Image 1 (cartoon, rainbow, N blue to C red):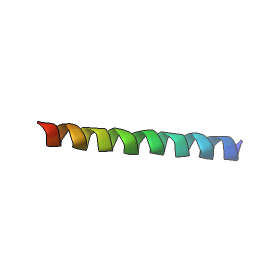
Image 2 (tube, one colour; image 1 turned 90 degrees about the vertical axis):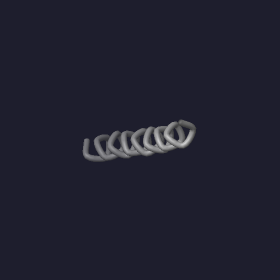
Image 3 (cartoon, rainbow, N blue to C red; image 1 turned 30 degrees about the horizontal axis):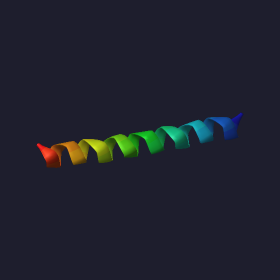
Image 4 (cartoon, one colour; image 1 turned 45 degrees about the horizontal axis):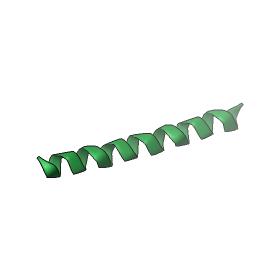
Length: 30
Protein backbone atom coordinates (compact mmCIF):
# COMPACT_ATOMS: atom_id res chain seq x y z
CA UNK A 1 0.00 0.00 0.00
CA UNK A 2 2.67 2.46 1.03
CA UNK A 3 4.91 1.46 -1.87
CA UNK A 4 2.05 1.93 -4.34
CA UNK A 5 1.41 5.45 -3.06
CA UNK A 6 5.13 6.23 -3.11
CA UNK A 7 5.46 5.07 -6.72
CA UNK A 8 2.46 7.13 -7.83
CA UNK A 9 3.98 10.13 -6.04
CA UNK A 10 7.26 9.57 -7.91
CA UNK A 11 5.43 9.42 -11.25
CA UNK A 12 3.57 12.64 -10.44
CA UNK A 13 6.90 14.27 -9.61
CA UNK A 14 8.33 13.20 -12.97
CA UNK A 15 5.34 14.62 -14.84
CA UNK A 16 5.56 17.89 -12.89
CA UNK A 17 9.26 18.26 -13.67
CA UNK A 18 8.75 17.54 -17.38
CA UNK A 19 5.88 20.02 -17.51
CA UNK A 20 8.06 22.65 -15.83
CA UNK A 21 10.83 22.03 -18.37
CA UNK A 22 8.36 22.28 -21.26
CA UNK A 23 6.99 25.58 -19.89
CA UNK A 24 10.53 26.97 -19.58
CA UNK A 25 11.24 26.00 -23.19
CA UNK A 26 8.00 27.66 -24.32
CA UNK A 27 8.95 30.86 -22.49
CA UNK A 28 12.36 30.83 -24.18
CA UNK A 29 10.71 30.50 -27.60
CA UNK A 30 8.34 33.40 -26.95
